[in-house]
Picture 1 (cartoon, rainbow, N blue to C red):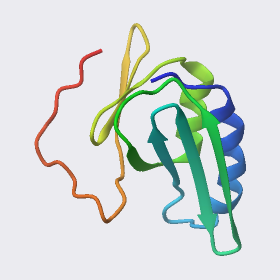
Picture 2 (picture 1 turned 90 degrees about the vertical axis):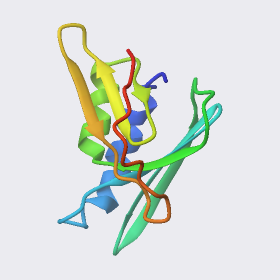
Picture 3 (picture 1 turned 60 degrees about the vertical axis):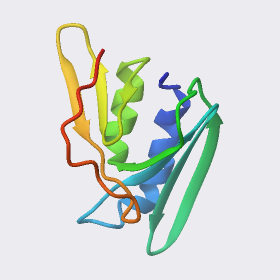
Length: 116
């Protein structure tokens, strides 16, 4: 999946509201073929932005810290999304994050290998 630079600004804007959740500052990402939506929500409001994206996989929703999302989009052009993991190949390193899934989606307990 490509990481469009628009995710940097979108994650900053969503963070305005999501950071009000001090114990759990996360934004929701919804990926669909050709489209990514980012949502940030807090007690005093919400922000949502959708953008075109080079993605042709299944619909997936997950939560991620907006600072991490913005940093990844700033430093990298591509990532691999698995059922509950995100992988970025940085050349001399690999960054893997376990994704927080919405409560209505069961988490896959099996370890899944992600190929880069």
